[in-house]
Image (cartoon, rainbow, N blue to C red; front, side, top):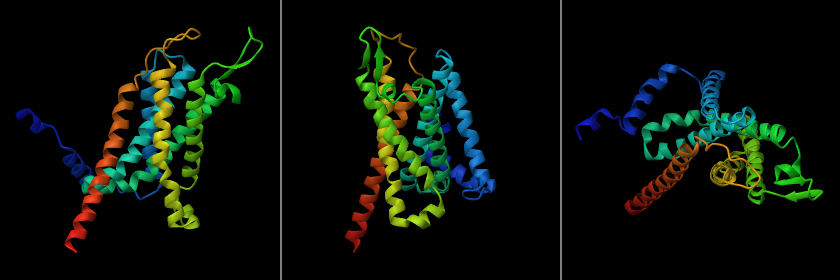
Length: 252
């Protein structure tokens, strides 16, 4: 198609950034890098906050941090597979740590806002139990809610560990193999967070006898696209690595 010539390919985009990345002259792990990524994180959070204008202010805020956090998790996780599939994107590997740290900042902020603003540090309420005056006792109202928050809490703890070990000093102290083992947990975090988010996007805020259903989140489509993209890229990069190893073995 003639019109498709005007649409840049992924390889073309990567080539453009590869040529211009050196002009930024931003050293690895420098404050300037964090300032750049942090500014982008705040801007993205504002966009999501503005998109949820029909929600109440408290819910808008923690949802905005959650949506921005998932977006940063997506960007962190696709860098590795993308570099294997498209070698020209290798320069993005030097940015992975900053994106990962700011994902942690967004995710931890999201969790604290919920614990403080909604659950009010009530453990029972956080896991789906509430006091019902008619019964005079605490009962389980949201079974799926408790499971989703359990997954989110496990992810929260792992995210904190990854954030505190995301430095060269931590790598030297832990040793390369131990550090690598800990940080492979980022893939587990993805699935924990994806299931946690899926519950709140597709199950929790549906018709219910005891709750007014808020408007559908604008994050549904981006969430689906990003989740599928991560899985597809991970599988594709793994297949490419396996094929490359098999070819080398055949040549020997």
